[in-house]
Image (cartoon, rainbow, N blue to C red; front, side, top):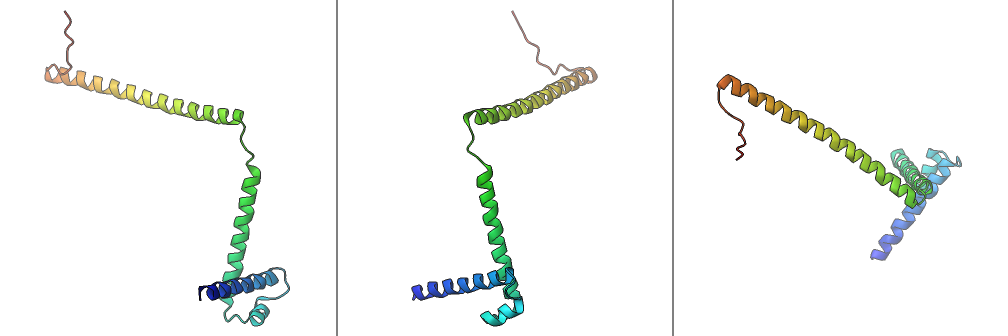
Length: 128
């Protein structure tokens, strides 16, 4: 039973692809293809045409992507890794600068609070 279902599905798929091919190559109009392949609605035909076009577009994009990306050499990998590390260093430098500014800000706030309140907030280091 399942075998019959697969055969019908394959036959339907073949019929759809043949009809779309005839429409795209200009051998038939949508209306004449509908009558030839006994399709009831125009929207079904347009959906099939769009589906086949999308599949073809995805297939060509995949082929272009594989053709454009040659295997990277060791030198290219080292350069990419160095670029990534350089970006990481810059990001860490920015974070360090922000942390230093924050520490400076907090020290200033503590000094102003000590002056206004007359209390000792900062811990004094005791050395012998």
